[in-house]
Image 1 (tube, rainbow, N blue to C red):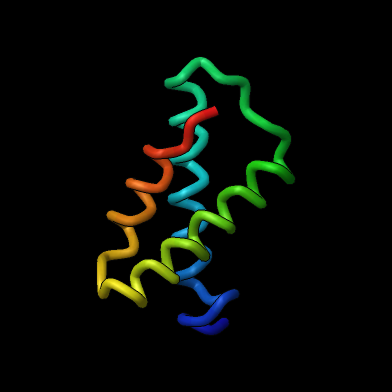
Image 2 (image 1 turned 90 degrees about the horizontal axis):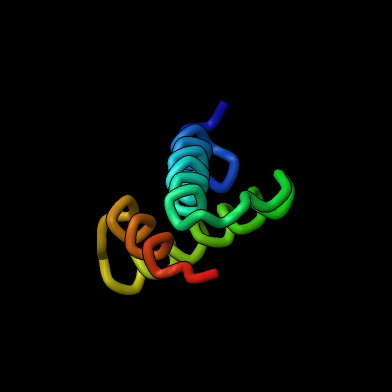
Length: 74
């Protein structure tokens, strides 16, 4: 198993963290959770966007993930 890369261990941990945070945000807002496939797609997009932002700004991925999920309004 690779550590880095799109399917690496660290990326999987980032996706898992973002997914839990996103699910918590939905529940906290009183919004029904989308189906698993939709939730996974949203999570992977958030993580990918966070990596793009981090590359441009040199920021911390976890802080970017938290901010992106906080900004989701549905």
